Length: 89
Image (cartoon, rainbow, N blue to C red; front, side):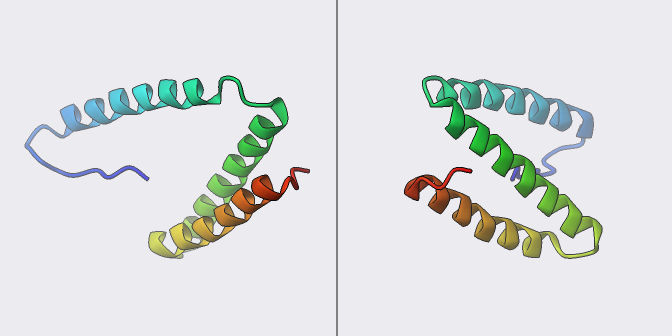
């Protein structure tokens, strides 16, 4: 989760800095995926979509963001466990 802080009068500049940072983060993310088995990448993609969907649904239903983060973290632990024991279905 990104931390956004208001540090100056130029709100638009802060937004541009955040977008540039996230763009660089994407390149690092894709670099780490190289050499991984296709089934692991597919499992990670399914997990990411499911966790994002869960987070946004909870927030849109009126739950606090902190509650949604905790719920997603618990479910993420299940995906990590599934990877460790080889239950990638």
